[in-house]
Image (cartoon, rainbow, N blue to C red; front, side, top):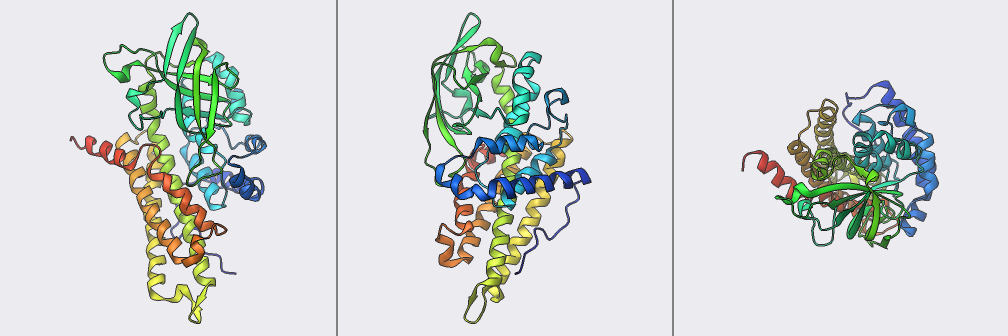
Length: 390
């Protein structure tokens, strides 16, 4: 049977150690995750043992110091490979990207030695699943005006409030919660701190698992905090500096979304190219019709352009050169291009594209959120526009 190539152009950014890591990641996803895809989609979350297996294979927390189980390697190419293979193998649900792309920087850079000893070994082994809670009901992208409060009471903070749209929210053992610790701050963004709330703390409850359009197997939840007493020793970094920490880490998160966009689009085009070879209409494969052949040619070329752009951003992260403006632009352009490709791929499947048993239908649903999370694409354009001096 015809197997379409994964790429037209050779990528120049990887070394042999990256190829070895890719082979490990691909094997993990193919053997541990793909066979459970239907189960996880129906249930709405993945299995914890898959996290443990990922930890054993070195697929978690490689940025952490070696004495805590990591490899002390800070190289976003590894993040890219893991995200790519997740989608290219047809995996679902496992929120490794949240741990490696988003929360890793906070736990690596902001933790004290005591906190590192408590949390990092489990972070790397997969025994401690992490999440970050920024979004709140009614607040959206305006993080500076969040309402969850943390009032100091001796050696503890008393946390009250609610968070929503929290990825890994159901399974997380450690949740980084953005809280308002200085309600009287001259500017709202100057009164925010980051606290790590641990599973089992009194007053910390998880609300309903949100019923999403797509990414059904990726657990997303509401979190509630009612007089949750969090030790001061669970604060990340300095008090009232949380907003600045968030802004520092968001570019990597947004680049991660762009990487997902390329990989999802590539998977969709692979599936569609294969379908166009196998599906006959009017006595010939549908890919031989000029309109379809041209559509596939255009999408393959667009993916290579998108991949080149994103690869440049990956290397810019490694060199410390990627700016917030550039990350926002990459997230906007990649996800907008992704959505156009996804929609065209579904169309090329005809009526079968609308049937859930076909992977293209799930990919189409799963891709829609890309233009929303990490900051809506309208916010991305606003960031780029402000960087132009407007």
